[in-house]
Image (cartoon, rainbow, N blue to C red; front, side):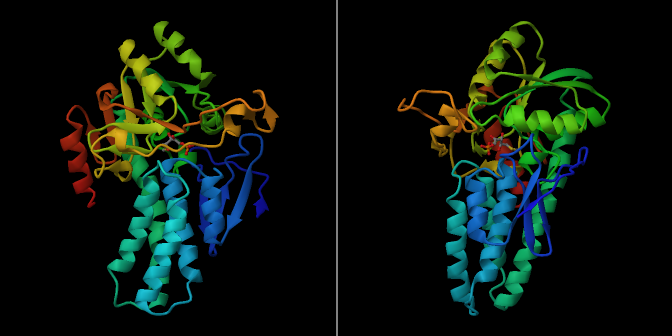
Length: 359
Ligand code: MRU
């Protein structure tokens, strides 16, 4: 593990690095007060990094899991195809069990597994080499996908726009550039005048800690607000659009995203403000008919009772801590993907986008 004191990459934050067989993750639990990089070569430690939120955000979790699977594969002793496949499935099961809501995790592991399925004639050694290329491709594809998504999304925005976002769907949540924040970056690059309102996003404070920090790196004007201020600002006419990311999108367009997203969507509808979701097609889960079927992660009570190590609530109080909620498709003005923008008939359009992406 290594600590890196200087960190400066405007617009180019890459929270996941891989070189010389080592995965380095920017520890997102420490931002913005400390910039710490942690190094990994063991798949069990990678699984723990995902579980404990060293890395978070649906696409970033998927990329990290792919590298974890690679490390697990390298440790497999079996040199026959069947033995390798069965051991690799076990590695993937450990990684898949880390966080249940973001479908990109299983999507990335499935992509790694299909490489093996497609090449039964290859030696185990060659399969391991192929897995390394596949993990790197997943990481690189993600940045390109986000830039395409940004282009499609920016076209929806007026020349001057005040955008509310919830959680962090930025470079830190992806391989780079971001989904919701990628749309914002693309709008800024196109010369639009953008001001971002960042919800602090209790309880993990991804908005206050991560979105505010990463937008500052790019000098994008940002105003941090507490989650309960959005309605007031909408009623005052200070918000023109909402853009959020997604952890899983059901076939009908229902969207699971960070807890509190649903509340923002209802507020946006009440105030006639467009509510946009930006997500790659790897976030679309056509196997689920609607959002009620999306598994919602419940996290530790201490995230609610404490801020950092500081206890806020009395000992012994009962707590609920669902990490995500589901926004029904009817509240969503458009879903922005790398293949274009879905509006209205999500069932047909999303399935078409997924087919186009070869899934
Ligand atoms: O619990 P987190 O921080 O992993 O949740 C992240 C979100 O909810 C993001 O909005 C979502 O993953 C989209 S990231 C491009």
